[in-house]
Image 1 (cartoon, rainbow, N blue to C red):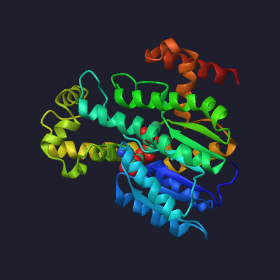
Image 2 (cartoon, rainbow, N blue to C red):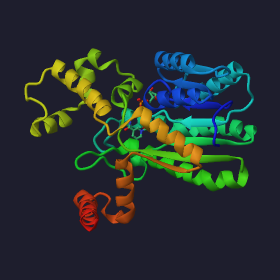
Image 3 (cartoon, helix red, strand yellow):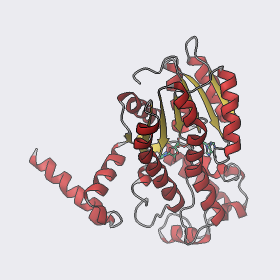
Image 4 (cartoon, rainbow, N blue to C red):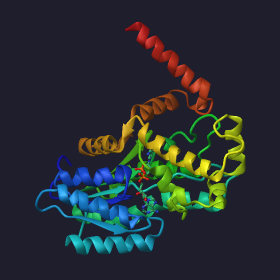
Length: 329
Ligand SMILES: NC(=O)c1ccc[n+]([C@@H]2O[C@H](COP(=O)([O-])OP(=O)(O)OC[C@H]3O[C@@H](n4cnc5c(N)ncnc54)[C@H](O)[C@@H]3O)[C@@H](O)[C@H]2O)c1
Protein backbone atom coordinates (compact mmCIF):
# COMPACT_ATOMS: atom_id res chain seq x y z
CA UNK A 1 0.00 0.00 0.00
CA UNK A 2 2.08 2.95 -1.19
CA UNK A 3 -0.74 5.48 -1.36
CA UNK A 4 -3.57 6.18 1.07
CA UNK A 5 -5.54 8.38 -1.35
CA UNK A 6 -9.16 7.34 -1.90
CA UNK A 7 -9.06 4.72 0.84
CA UNK A 8 -11.01 4.45 4.10
CA UNK A 9 -9.19 4.10 7.43
CA UNK A 10 -10.67 3.21 10.81
CA UNK A 11 -8.83 4.51 13.88
CA UNK A 12 -9.67 3.75 17.49
CA UNK A 13 -8.60 6.26 20.14
CA UNK A 14 -8.64 9.08 17.59
CA UNK A 15 -9.41 11.81 20.14
CA UNK A 16 -5.83 12.35 21.31
CA UNK A 17 -2.15 11.62 20.88
CA UNK A 18 -1.00 9.25 18.15
CA UNK A 19 -4.58 8.42 17.11
CA UNK A 20 -5.42 12.08 16.53
CA UNK A 21 -2.22 12.60 14.51
CA UNK A 22 -2.90 9.47 12.43
CA UNK A 23 -6.35 10.87 11.59
CA UNK A 24 -4.96 14.21 10.50
CA UNK A 25 -1.99 12.82 8.51
CA UNK A 26 -4.15 10.24 6.73
CA UNK A 27 -6.80 12.82 5.87
CA UNK A 28 -4.09 15.16 4.56
CA UNK A 29 -2.88 12.26 2.36
CA UNK A 30 -6.33 11.97 0.76
CA UNK A 31 -7.65 9.10 2.90
CA UNK A 32 -11.14 9.20 4.39
CA UNK A 33 -11.19 8.34 8.08
CA UNK A 34 -13.70 7.08 10.64
CA UNK A 35 -12.26 7.66 14.11
CA UNK A 36 -13.74 6.63 17.43
CA UNK A 37 -12.93 7.43 21.03
CA UNK A 38 -14.26 6.94 24.52
CA UNK A 39 -14.31 10.72 24.71
CA UNK A 40 -16.90 11.95 22.17
CA UNK A 41 -15.83 15.61 22.45
CA UNK A 42 -12.16 15.11 21.63
CA UNK A 43 -12.84 12.79 18.69
CA UNK A 44 -15.40 15.27 17.33
CA UNK A 45 -12.70 18.00 17.53
CA UNK A 46 -10.24 15.70 15.73
CA UNK A 47 -12.72 15.09 12.93
CA UNK A 48 -13.57 18.77 12.48
CA UNK A 49 -9.93 19.88 12.33
CA UNK A 50 -8.80 17.03 10.06
CA UNK A 51 -11.77 17.64 7.75
CA UNK A 52 -10.88 21.33 7.55
CA UNK A 53 -7.35 20.47 6.34
CA UNK A 54 -8.42 17.71 3.93
CA UNK A 55 -8.83 18.00 0.18
CA UNK A 56 -12.00 17.32 -1.84
CA UNK A 57 -13.46 13.81 -1.70
CA UNK A 58 -12.10 13.12 1.80
CA UNK A 59 -14.62 12.52 4.58
CA UNK A 60 -13.57 12.42 8.24
CA UNK A 61 -16.10 11.28 10.84
CA UNK A 62 -15.86 11.02 14.63
CA UNK A 63 -17.78 8.45 16.67
CA UNK A 64 -18.23 7.66 20.36
CA UNK A 65 -17.21 4.10 21.26
CA UNK A 66 -15.69 2.14 24.14
CA UNK A 67 -13.49 -0.47 22.45
CA UNK A 68 -13.72 -2.75 25.49
CA UNK A 69 -17.39 -3.31 24.60
CA UNK A 70 -17.93 -5.36 21.42
CA UNK A 71 -21.52 -4.14 21.03
CA UNK A 72 -20.28 -0.54 20.85
CA UNK A 73 -17.69 -1.49 18.22
CA UNK A 74 -20.43 -3.15 16.15
CA UNK A 75 -22.48 0.04 16.39
CA UNK A 76 -19.39 2.08 15.37
CA UNK A 77 -18.94 -0.23 12.35
CA UNK A 78 -22.56 0.22 11.25
CA UNK A 79 -22.42 4.00 11.72
CA UNK A 80 -19.24 4.42 9.71
CA UNK A 81 -20.30 2.19 6.82
CA UNK A 82 -23.45 4.24 6.50
CA UNK A 83 -21.73 7.62 6.89
CA UNK A 84 -19.04 6.74 4.33
CA UNK A 85 -21.43 4.81 2.04
CA UNK A 86 -18.99 1.87 1.78
CA UNK A 87 -19.18 -1.89 2.27
CA UNK A 88 -15.53 -2.39 3.23
CA UNK A 89 -12.55 -0.60 4.80
CA UNK A 90 -8.86 -0.51 3.79
CA UNK A 91 -6.89 0.30 6.94
CA UNK A 92 -7.69 -0.36 10.60
CA UNK A 93 -5.59 1.13 13.40
CA UNK A 94 -6.33 -0.53 16.77
CA UNK A 95 -4.65 2.32 18.62
CA UNK A 96 -6.85 3.05 21.68
CA UNK A 97 -5.11 2.22 24.93
CA UNK A 98 -4.60 3.32 28.52
CA UNK A 99 -2.01 2.91 31.25
CA UNK A 100 -2.84 1.37 34.61
CA UNK A 101 -2.89 -1.76 36.73
CA UNK A 102 0.78 -1.38 37.67
CA UNK A 103 0.68 -4.08 40.36
CA UNK A 104 -1.17 -7.41 40.27
CA UNK A 105 0.07 -8.20 43.77
CA UNK A 106 -0.82 -4.98 45.50
CA UNK A 107 -3.08 -3.04 43.16
CA UNK A 108 -6.80 -2.58 42.70
CA UNK A 109 -8.40 -5.48 40.83
CA UNK A 110 -10.97 -3.35 38.99
CA UNK A 111 -8.21 -1.07 37.66
CA UNK A 112 -6.17 -4.10 36.48
CA UNK A 113 -9.17 -5.57 34.69
CA UNK A 114 -10.29 -2.28 33.08
CA UNK A 115 -6.76 -1.69 31.76
CA UNK A 116 -6.54 -5.22 30.39
CA UNK A 117 -10.03 -4.98 28.85
CA UNK A 118 -9.17 -1.80 26.94
CA UNK A 119 -5.61 -2.72 25.95
CA UNK A 120 -6.21 -6.35 25.00
CA UNK A 121 -9.94 -6.93 24.45
CA UNK A 122 -10.20 -3.58 22.66
CA UNK A 123 -7.66 -4.77 20.10
CA UNK A 124 -9.20 -8.25 19.93
CA UNK A 125 -12.77 -6.97 19.36
CA UNK A 126 -11.51 -4.45 16.80
CA UNK A 127 -9.98 -7.34 14.84
CA UNK A 128 -13.16 -9.45 15.23
CA UNK A 129 -15.34 -6.62 13.95
CA UNK A 130 -13.11 -5.22 11.19
CA UNK A 131 -11.08 -8.09 9.68
CA UNK A 132 -14.14 -9.22 7.66
CA UNK A 133 -14.39 -5.68 6.24
CA UNK A 134 -10.68 -5.68 5.35
CA UNK A 135 -11.12 -9.05 3.63
CA UNK A 136 -14.17 -7.69 1.78
CA UNK A 137 -11.99 -4.90 0.35
CA UNK A 138 -9.61 -7.39 -1.25
CA UNK A 139 -6.52 -5.73 0.18
CA UNK A 140 -6.06 -4.08 3.51
CA UNK A 141 -3.99 -3.73 6.63
CA UNK A 142 -4.64 -4.10 10.34
CA UNK A 143 -2.24 -2.04 12.49
CA UNK A 144 -2.25 -3.05 16.14
CA UNK A 145 -0.56 -0.82 18.70
CA UNK A 146 1.44 -2.71 21.30
CA UNK A 147 4.37 -1.07 23.13
CA UNK A 148 7.92 -1.70 24.30
CA UNK A 149 5.95 -3.32 27.11
CA UNK A 150 4.90 -5.88 24.50
CA UNK A 151 8.42 -7.35 24.64
CA UNK A 152 9.73 -6.02 27.98
CA UNK A 153 7.30 -6.29 30.90
CA UNK A 154 8.59 -3.55 33.19
CA UNK A 155 9.28 0.17 33.23
CA UNK A 156 12.60 -0.30 35.04
CA UNK A 157 13.76 -0.50 38.66
CA UNK A 158 10.90 -0.20 41.16
CA UNK A 159 8.33 0.40 38.42
CA UNK A 160 6.21 -2.66 37.64
CA UNK A 161 3.64 -2.30 34.84
CA UNK A 162 1.59 -5.46 35.17
CA UNK A 163 -1.82 -5.18 33.45
CA UNK A 164 -0.48 -2.96 30.67
CA UNK A 165 2.44 -5.29 29.88
CA UNK A 166 0.23 -8.38 30.02
CA UNK A 167 -2.16 -6.81 27.51
CA UNK A 168 0.59 -5.45 25.25
CA UNK A 169 2.34 -8.86 25.14
CA UNK A 170 -1.04 -10.30 24.11
CA UNK A 171 -1.39 -7.67 21.37
CA UNK A 172 2.06 -8.48 20.02
CA UNK A 173 1.48 -12.25 20.22
CA UNK A 174 -1.90 -11.98 18.51
CA UNK A 175 -0.46 -9.77 15.77
CA UNK A 176 2.47 -12.10 15.13
CA UNK A 177 0.08 -15.07 15.06
CA UNK A 178 -2.02 -13.24 12.47
CA UNK A 179 0.94 -12.90 10.08
CA UNK A 180 0.75 -16.54 8.94
CA UNK A 181 -2.98 -16.87 9.57
CA UNK A 182 -3.77 -14.00 7.18
CA UNK A 183 -1.17 -15.20 4.68
CA UNK A 184 -3.00 -18.55 4.50
CA UNK A 185 -6.63 -17.52 4.94
CA UNK A 186 -6.84 -13.91 3.71
CA UNK A 187 -3.81 -13.25 1.51
CA UNK A 188 -4.95 -9.75 0.56
CA UNK A 189 -4.83 -8.57 4.16
CA UNK A 190 -1.75 -8.07 6.29
CA UNK A 191 -0.99 -7.05 9.84
CA UNK A 192 1.56 -4.73 11.42
CA UNK A 193 2.36 -4.32 15.10
CA UNK A 194 3.51 -0.95 16.43
CA UNK A 195 5.83 -0.84 19.43
CA UNK A 196 6.42 2.70 20.61
CA UNK A 197 8.85 3.80 23.27
CA UNK A 198 8.09 7.07 25.06
CA UNK A 199 5.87 9.28 22.89
CA UNK A 200 4.61 12.67 24.10
CA UNK A 201 0.85 12.41 24.64
CA UNK A 202 -1.77 13.01 27.34
CA UNK A 203 -2.04 9.28 28.07
CA UNK A 204 -1.54 9.81 31.81
CA UNK A 205 -4.62 12.05 32.21
CA UNK A 206 -6.65 10.17 29.58
CA UNK A 207 -6.04 6.89 31.42
CA UNK A 208 -7.61 8.31 34.60
CA UNK A 209 -10.64 9.39 32.56
CA UNK A 210 -10.98 5.93 30.99
CA UNK A 211 -11.24 4.51 34.53
CA UNK A 212 -14.21 6.80 35.22
CA UNK A 213 -12.24 9.39 37.21
CA UNK A 214 -12.83 13.14 36.71
CA UNK A 215 -10.26 15.68 35.46
CA UNK A 216 -7.23 15.73 37.78
CA UNK A 217 -8.19 19.17 39.13
CA UNK A 218 -11.62 17.85 40.16
CA UNK A 219 -10.45 14.66 41.92
CA UNK A 220 -11.67 14.20 45.50
CA UNK A 221 -9.30 13.10 48.26
CA UNK A 222 -10.64 9.54 47.97
CA UNK A 223 -9.99 9.55 44.22
CA UNK A 224 -6.45 10.90 44.77
CA UNK A 225 -5.92 8.06 47.22
CA UNK A 226 -7.06 5.61 44.51
CA UNK A 227 -4.65 7.10 41.95
CA UNK A 228 -1.70 7.45 44.35
CA UNK A 229 -2.16 4.76 47.02
CA UNK A 230 -0.62 5.29 50.47
CA UNK A 231 2.24 2.88 49.70
CA UNK A 232 3.17 4.84 46.54
CA UNK A 233 2.90 8.11 48.47
CA UNK A 234 5.23 6.79 51.16
CA UNK A 235 7.75 5.68 48.52
CA UNK A 236 7.65 9.15 46.92
CA UNK A 237 8.20 10.82 50.29
CA UNK A 238 11.17 8.50 50.94
CA UNK A 239 12.59 9.34 47.52
CA UNK A 240 12.25 13.08 48.25
CA UNK A 241 9.69 13.53 45.44
CA UNK A 242 6.87 14.58 47.76
CA UNK A 243 6.75 16.58 51.01
CA UNK A 244 5.61 14.65 54.07
CA UNK A 245 2.82 17.16 54.70
CA UNK A 246 1.67 17.33 51.04
CA UNK A 247 -1.94 18.54 50.75
CA UNK A 248 -4.59 17.23 48.34
CA UNK A 249 -3.89 20.27 46.15
CA UNK A 250 -0.17 19.45 46.09
CA UNK A 251 -1.07 15.94 44.89
CA UNK A 252 -3.37 17.30 42.17
CA UNK A 253 -0.62 19.65 40.99
CA UNK A 254 1.89 16.80 41.01
CA UNK A 255 -0.41 14.72 38.75
CA UNK A 256 -0.98 17.62 36.37
CA UNK A 257 2.82 18.07 36.20
CA UNK A 258 3.37 14.34 35.66
CA UNK A 259 0.98 14.38 32.69
CA UNK A 260 2.56 17.53 31.22
CA UNK A 261 6.12 16.18 31.69
CA UNK A 262 5.19 12.86 30.08
CA UNK A 263 3.81 14.79 27.10
CA UNK A 264 6.34 17.61 26.81
CA UNK A 265 9.61 15.87 27.71
CA UNK A 266 9.23 12.87 25.43
CA UNK A 267 11.92 12.20 22.82
CA UNK A 268 9.28 11.69 20.10
CA UNK A 269 6.12 13.76 19.57
CA UNK A 270 2.75 12.23 18.72
CA UNK A 271 2.95 13.74 15.22
CA UNK A 272 6.44 12.28 14.65
CA UNK A 273 5.22 8.90 15.91
CA UNK A 274 2.26 8.94 13.49
CA UNK A 275 4.63 9.71 10.60
CA UNK A 276 6.88 6.78 11.59
CA UNK A 277 3.83 4.49 11.78
CA UNK A 278 2.50 5.56 8.37
CA UNK A 279 5.95 5.27 6.77
CA UNK A 280 6.14 1.75 8.21
CA UNK A 281 2.73 0.87 6.80
CA UNK A 282 3.71 2.20 3.35
CA UNK A 283 7.00 0.27 3.42
CA UNK A 284 5.27 -3.06 4.08
CA UNK A 285 6.92 -3.57 7.50
CA UNK A 286 5.08 -5.86 9.91
CA UNK A 287 7.03 -4.67 12.95
CA UNK A 288 7.20 -0.93 13.55
CA UNK A 289 9.40 0.32 16.40
CA UNK A 290 8.83 3.98 17.30
CA UNK A 291 11.75 5.90 18.84
CA UNK A 292 15.40 5.20 19.64
CA UNK A 293 14.43 4.04 23.15
CA UNK A 294 12.24 1.31 21.65
CA UNK A 295 15.10 0.22 19.35
CA UNK A 296 17.61 0.15 22.22
CA UNK A 297 15.36 -1.88 24.54
CA UNK A 298 14.45 -4.26 21.70
CA UNK A 299 18.12 -4.85 20.87
CA UNK A 300 19.10 -5.25 24.53
CA UNK A 301 16.36 -7.76 25.36
CA UNK A 302 17.13 -9.79 22.23
CA UNK A 303 20.85 -9.79 22.95
CA UNK A 304 20.42 -10.82 26.60
CA UNK A 305 16.96 -12.26 27.25
CA UNK A 306 18.00 -13.68 30.62
CA UNK A 307 19.06 -10.19 31.78
CA UNK A 308 15.78 -8.53 30.75
CA UNK A 309 14.94 -7.68 34.39
CA UNK A 310 18.49 -7.29 35.65
CA UNK A 311 18.61 -3.66 34.62
CA UNK A 312 22.26 -2.95 35.40
CA UNK A 313 23.33 -5.98 33.37
CA UNK A 314 20.84 -5.25 30.55
CA UNK A 315 21.64 -1.58 30.02
CA UNK A 316 25.13 -1.54 31.53
CA UNK A 317 26.28 -4.02 28.91
CA UNK A 318 24.70 -1.93 26.23
CA UNK A 319 26.43 1.25 27.46
CA UNK A 320 29.76 -0.66 27.33
CA UNK A 321 29.05 -1.82 23.76
CA UNK A 322 28.11 1.71 22.71
CA UNK A 323 31.20 3.16 24.36
CA UNK A 324 33.35 0.50 22.65
CA UNK A 325 31.65 1.24 19.32
CA UNK A 326 32.29 4.96 19.71
CA UNK A 327 35.92 4.35 20.69
CA UNK A 328 36.44 2.20 17.59
CA UNK A 329 35.11 4.86 15.20
N1 LIG B 1 2.53 7.48 24.66
C1 LIG B 1 3.40 6.49 24.82
O1 LIG B 1 4.54 6.70 25.31
C2 LIG B 1 3.06 5.10 24.37
C3 LIG B 1 4.09 4.14 24.37
C4 LIG B 1 3.80 2.85 23.95
C5 LIG B 1 2.53 2.54 23.51
N2 LIG B 1 1.55 3.48 23.53
C6 LIG B 1 0.23 3.08 23.05
O2 LIG B 1 -0.16 3.93 21.98
C7 LIG B 1 -1.58 4.00 21.91
C8 LIG B 1 -2.01 5.45 21.81
O3 LIG B 1 -1.65 6.08 23.03
P1 LIG B 1 -1.35 7.65 23.17
O4 LIG B 1 -0.08 7.76 23.89
O5 LIG B 1 -1.55 8.34 21.90
O6 LIG B 1 -2.47 8.03 24.25
P2 LIG B 1 -3.63 9.13 24.28
O7 LIG B 1 -4.22 9.03 25.63
O8 LIG B 1 -3.12 10.46 23.84
O9 LIG B 1 -4.66 8.60 23.18
C9 LIG B 1 -5.39 7.42 23.39
C10 LIG B 1 -6.85 7.69 23.09
O10 LIG B 1 -7.56 6.46 23.33
C11 LIG B 1 -8.77 6.79 23.96
N3 LIG B 1 -9.31 5.64 24.68
C12 LIG B 1 -8.94 5.18 25.90
N4 LIG B 1 -9.70 4.15 26.25
C13 LIG B 1 -10.58 3.95 25.24
C14 LIG B 1 -11.64 3.03 25.03
N5 LIG B 1 -11.95 2.11 25.96
N6 LIG B 1 -12.33 3.10 23.88
C15 LIG B 1 -12.03 4.04 22.94
N7 LIG B 1 -11.05 4.95 23.11
C16 LIG B 1 -10.34 4.90 24.24
C17 LIG B 1 -8.44 7.94 24.87
O11 LIG B 1 -9.61 8.67 25.24
C18 LIG B 1 -7.48 8.74 24.02
O12 LIG B 1 -8.16 9.72 23.25
C19 LIG B 1 -2.09 3.26 23.14
O13 LIG B 1 -2.44 1.95 22.79
C20 LIG B 1 -0.89 3.25 24.06
O14 LIG B 1 -0.93 2.19 24.98
C21 LIG B 1 1.78 4.76 23.95
